[in-house]
Every structure is written in structure tokens, then in C-alpha cells.
Length: 314
Image 1 (cartoon, one colour):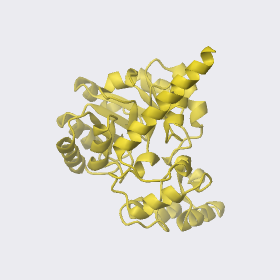
Image 2 (cartoon, rainbow, N blue to C red):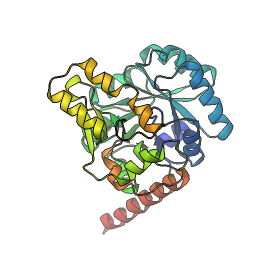
Image 3 (tube, rainbow, N blue to C red):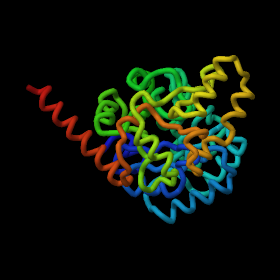
């Protein structure tokens, strides 16, 4: 399955794994890349030397392309940006800010820069700044979200920019991939689907909660602060939403969630931890290898596109 994104990144299939904090480490990134997609290491708020170590460990597990997701609000972002160049990483996705200050350095090193955007305006800004592609992420996704749905956002971004667009948010199978391609995207990015991959280091409690989730089991916290986050409902989300309704200030809300994502991912605390996951969780029913996930979604998408094409020709 060849698209502008597979050609740009040198990958077999137009499937990208989300750069999820605490989840997207070297084992998962390498497994997705070995399966023909693009694996990502989530730098999150990690120190630069931890990111360097993750890059080197990934390289021991795969000779395929992989990338790093840089959260630009990370206080270590300047050092992480340099490590990416020093270690010869060729693909970077960015979030939580504008990567303009690193663009010249990355471009000189031959790094492909792909910012995650939640609006047409931001997509245009990233294109003007030299981005090679953008990830248009709808509010159905897990973690930090925007305000527009994937099916509304993706075609508008595709119409607004001349660089390739990757669709994200609410995609977990071949039907979602086929829909994204029909909307004009050149690839899909999936996070929640890879959370429950066999190669994912996520605690079994977290994986089981995603697998057991239904279509209505996610909640959005942080709307009052302007930093909305989608996660699965539990004791923590109930407390958070109650505090929001009572008018609690930002610091009080932050105190409730401090370290809670790590507690859920690593320690398996799915009661008081933050279980970030998208609305697509209801479609995920079992743990599979990254190879199975990637090949199944591509096979299904191809069949859908070919079948629909034949029907349209009648």
C-alpha cells in the first residue's frame, strides 16, 4: 500500500504509532516498525539522555525507520531536539507547541518534521514553517485533544495544505483506515490500538480496562482549564469532574492528576490513575501483536476500498 507518506518515510504501510507518554518506548516502536509501519518513541517529559538510550535500544531491535515524538512543552525539549540530530533519527512528530525554533537544525540534518495539529489554522502555520506533513488529530483520540472530530477535521486540513496529511483519532481497524484515505489522508496514526499490543509494556490492568471498555466509557477532563484530556472513566475522573463543577482552580486539579498516568501505565492503578484512551476503545476486543494489528488493518482497508470501487463502477 503505497502513499505519499510511505514514500516520504520509507515505510511499507501507511500506519503510524502514536507517541504516547510512558507507553511509546523502544519495544513498541521497534515492533511497529518491524511490522511495516512507523514506530515512535514518546519523549514526553523525559531527560535527553533517557531519550538517547531509547533511540539506541530501538536501533538494536529494528533496522527499519522509526521516529521520536517531541512534546514541545517538555523543559528538556532543547536537549532532546539535539539528541535526535546526534543519533541520526530521521522522523520527528511534535505536539504541544510550535517546532519553529528547531526546524532549521532538523532540516539541515535531513529530519522529516511532522507536527500534530487540531485545526486548519495550525496546519497552515506548520506548512509555512517547513513541515513535511501534519497529523490531523480529532477529538475522538485519547490523551490531550482538540475540539473538532476527525471526520470533520481531516478533509478540511487536506483541502487547506499541500503537504501530506495523516489522520488520527477514532481509528482502530481497516474501516477507519479506509475512511481516512477516502477523506484525503495519506496515512493513519493509531494510539489506543497499540496500547494493547502484545509488545506494549503497559500494565495488564490498563490493557484489560481498554479491552472491556464500551463506546461510552471515556470522559473528557480539563475542559475548564483549556487543556482537555480524554481518558477512561474511573474514580479519578469522577473526582476530577466534580472538582471542575465546583470551580476548583488549576493547581488543585493538577495536584489530583500528578503522576497519575505513570501510575496507571506502569503500576496498573486504573482506579486513581489516568487511563488515557480514545473513544475507539469499544472496538478493541483482544491483545494482538503489532504485526497482526498492522497487517489486519491494511488487509481490511484494501478489501473495503477495492469492493467499494467495484460497486461504484456498476
